[in-house]
Length: 495
Image (tube, rainbow, N blue to C red; front, side):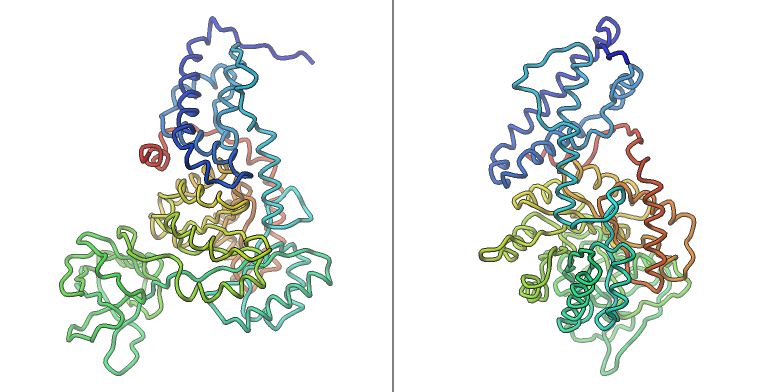
């Protein structure tokens, strides 16, 4: 086989100056953030540098040069998230440029691939099939007293058992843990315990006078009111409250308020004496009732709350004893992560790794800062929690945003969990939809796939293993063009 030779500079030499400029910008950006890199855990510093290199690259519109590179038969810089600087340098070398050996980035394709695999296996544990992602399964309450059921899940491929602290209690969680560990020993299949913190509960609470109100009828264009959960009930008929105190003070006229996974969309008209006046703009479901306990999202509102609740903090001792991983629900800003990192440190033991659940607009926008804060510990992960995320950012933007989360997480060499409604119809009814089969195949872009609880989990695990095995050889073959990435621009310009 003939060895390849550099592309002739007389035809493609005009590509060299912009590539050098790109490389210079990437190096300058990392130097500008050098004080932040000093705070990063030593094992994470190369990853932090690569993230900054990638952010610098993605803050620019590269589509024109990408097309020319592709036409020249060279790397168009797509799929270079894990080794951004080295990919630019490699293209320069293919164009005949010679770079000083001591200045060439050591973070290349092979290094980053090994690093990502190592981190995923440490975070999520060993797995039987190296060609498919790790498989996480959410524990149903019944699993606390169903040892055989837990063992069957392990035999079907479960690598991580997810316990959702938003449900049940410590006694139930403990029985789940005991069944998982017993089944793991008996089957010889290792299984990590993933403890998901509940996070702030933003739910509908329908105020009433002396009686429990389960639902409230509402129509499009109708005016209604939102109050604090502990407020006296005024004489107005159409009222709702949010279970999270302090929300009313954060609202502004024009802010959207979404109820019940986005089925109802309202807008704030005004705020007066801790009462917000809202107008119902859209009702997408067949039933026009707001029900107690359904979720509320405030995608346009800067909520003046911490993501870590008092209830979450009360769960930490249980996590210290039983959890291998802790999921951080509704994380919004780096300061939230720093607080949980501090709480999860254990005397004479390694801190428990955190998985950052990206499920709010704020978390998506703050992702670079969240990743850098996560890098202050030797190991962490990211979950694309598509349920609330889709509601917060709009369903039509979900595909775009989940792609961006995958890119930035890979640039940080952070393992990713693909979560929410994976093969949901198959899990609930025993029959998959065509669209969710395609969605499941796309999960090969992540290091782990999460399944919710359901009646047909064994069937889902078998189907998912089959889909992921068939799709696993294809997901590196996609080519992207890099328009400016808003998240990258905002982060780079914030310095």
